[in-house]
Length: 113
Length: 112
Image 1 (tube, rainbow over the protein chains, first blue to last red):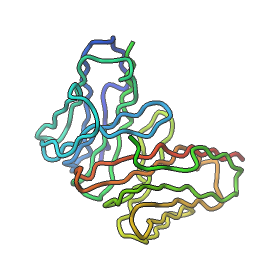
Image 2 (tube, chains in turn cyan, brown):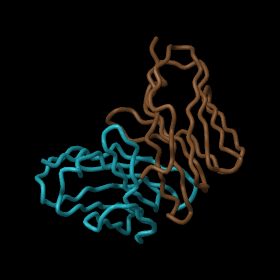
Image 3 (cartoon, rainbow over the protein chains, first blue to last red):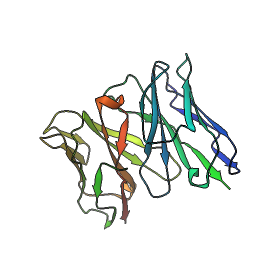
C-alpha cells in the first residue's frame, strides 16, 4: 500500500502571494489533518477533515483554509503569505477519526521571502 | 501553544546506555501517541496508548501511559546509534476530532 504523498516537496513564495499544497492520503484512510512545523519545534495542528467535512481546527487565522475531495485527498491553501509562514507543512492520514494513529507524509518545505 | 511538555529537550548519550523521555500535560487525553522523526522526513508512529496505566513494549522501547491519562514516558534500553532522532509525544482529544497536539520533542543523539 502507498503511504501519504505530498506535493510539491519544496516551494519558494513571495510575501503576499497565495499557495496551495496537496496531499494524497494513504489508501483506505478517510481522515486527513494538516500540521505546520517550524524549525526546532513540534508540529502545530492546523485543521482536520473527516469524510470531506472539517471536524477540527487549531489556532490558525482564516487565511489558512483547506479542502478534502471525495477520494479523501486534500489541499491546504494559504493566502496573503507572511514571512512567519515559512515552515515544513505536514499532512497526515488516519483510517478513521479516532485513536488509530496517523501516517505522515514527508512534508512540503515552504519558504516565504 | 504546546499543551504537552516534553523533557529533556536534548539528550546525548553513548551506545548501550538507558534513557527515559517524559511527556506531561494538565489535560486528559483520549490517547497518547509517540512518534519518531528524522531530518527531512515526517514523523513515524511508534505506539498509541489509550488506557490509563497501559504499558506497551516495542523491542527495546517501553511506553507507559499515566493512570490519569495526562502523562506518558518512553524508556529506551541499551540505546543504539540507529535510535538517534527526534521523539515526539502527541495527545489526541475527542472534541477536536482526535487530531494531535504535539510536544516540542526530545532530540536524541546516540554516539558509538
